[in-house]
Structure formats: C-alpha cells, structure tokens
Image (cartoon, rainbow, N blue to C red; front, side):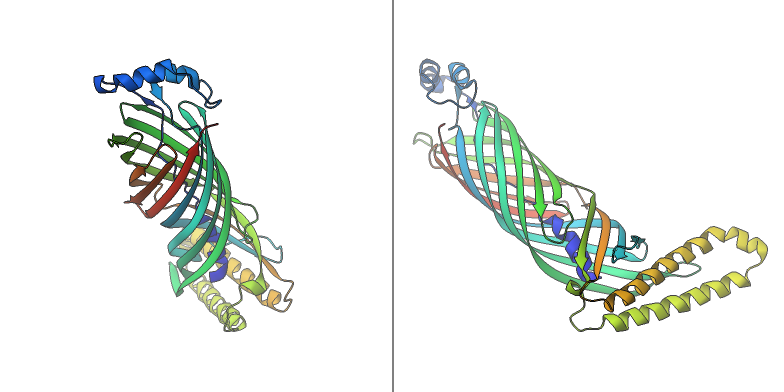
Length: 371
C-alpha cells in the first residue's frame, strides 16, 4: 500500500517557471527626457510586440521581444490527500478514506525547465514550458480498523520514494512599468506526466509581483527587487493503475500481512457483532447508523484484503487501480526575489518562497533578442 500512495503523490512536482523580470517601462522624469525623446522619435525596428511602434512613440522603453530561459527549481510542499479508493484487477473501487489516514505527505522536487517567450503585446508576455524534474516523496500514514465506538490504529508507516517526471505547459504575464516601478501578474498552466498516472496531472500557478528597478551608470545595466505571492492549484481528482508486482514489499511479507489483516478484521467483526447482540432493542435503534457504517468499513477492508490475496496468486498479471482527491495544504506562500541585468540581452535572477506550507528556490538565466 505504501508504494501505491507514493505513486499517487508524484503530481506534487510542479513546474514553477521563473520569468526574467523585464517589462515595458514608461519613461518619466526630467533626467530621462533625452531617453524619452529618443524613443518617441526613433523607428521601432521589430515585428513584435504588436503595437510596439505605438508604445515607443508614447514614450515606453520595450525589452527585446523574444527570449530563451533556463531555470533551476527546488521546492518542498505539503499535500492533503483524501477520498482514497482502491481496486484490484479492475474490481470495484473500494472506499478506504477512513481506514487509511494520511498524517503527513511532503514532496521535494528539483529540476530544470526551459522557457521560450515572446512579447505578443507591449504589456503581455506569453511563454512555453518544457521541464524535467526529480521528486522525492515522503509519506506518513496510519491504518485504522473500526470498532463499535471508534477507530483503532493498527499500524503507522513512514516511507520515501523517488520518481522522474516530465512537464509541458504555457503561461501569460500581463505587466506594466512606470518610472522603474512595475507590476507583473504571472499565470501558467502545466501538465505533469508520469508512468503511474492514468492521465497527466494539471496544475495552475498564479504569481503576482510588485517591484522596482534601479539603474546603474552603464547603459541598460540594472538590478531589480520585488515581493509578491505564489498560489498553486492542482486538479483535485487523480486516477491510475499500477502492476501489483511493482508495489510488493521487498521483504516478501505481503502474504503474511494479508493474513494478519484478515485475522484482525475477523476478530473486530466478532467484537462488533457481540456488542450489537448485547444491546437492547431501544439501544440498537439509537446505534443503528454506527453499526451499519462499522460493518460497511469492515466489509471494505475484508473485500480488499481478500482480493489482494487472490491477486498475489495471479502474478505477474495482477494490477491495482486507484482514485483519490488531493490539494495543497495551503495554496499561497510569500516570495521575494532579485534580478541582475547585465544588458538588454543577458539577465540572471533568483527567487525564494516561504511561509505557508511550501518552501522554494528558483534561479534562472535568460537571453533576449529582437524579432
């Protein structure tokens, strides 16, 4: 069971993309009159962005219209998992939400992403995402068996596994600058693919940033600093299938665990039945819902264990199907960042995110050119 759960959590390797922080800046102030006059009188030489000529004629200094960037990402985040259902050899999916409970699930991701972009409009950047990542996932979960009064934890387990993932997506960034101060509203949509998932996992990232650029004496050389937020949303439902032999315990103890589990369920079922028989008719009416729900959960546990026992004898053809809902423990965290621009072609940047239940670092290098 533990490795199945790890496979389900791989979607946590989100491909967060760092944009080199460039923008269309409205040139203002007496000391910048010469630059503004030059922009307004010169002919804009590139096809993109659309309306680029009108923007420069209005006194906006534009970045080069195309860019190629590469970024390194490290991220650690906590995830909430519920509504877990598991089936064996394409049987019905059995509800395990109250039987398997996640105490903690943390995914640590590191990887590289490649980001080509263009300025479609003077105030709108669009980009693509191609990424590879390696994810280390740690899961702490407990298994419970119900009785007539509550649930009893039969064991607790911690485990860790590593996976590789590939991500594709796209993003848009509306942005505006005036006198070196700027606002950017970055949004991207990505799909992360791994072998164990039935379909790629979808995620949406929104990152508003507010910053200021400080120019050096050398032309086009500057440094920017900013603060902002980082919000992640992931598709809530995940379904997939995995071969049973891929999740068997390495110590070969699955058969013993199944037998032990069946004995525990049988013992608990007898205890519940004895408790029910000891009640008066009036007490039974008061406890009917509890009794029915307890029997349902014990029946689910018994069915799953019985099907697993049969599946072990059908290796290597046996498989496990699963379904669950998942979400970030907290969608938002706080970010701060900075960028050094050597010239209008080359820039390097770094950003850290913290607070909330997610911590991240990203560093990127970008080269820009005109189209």
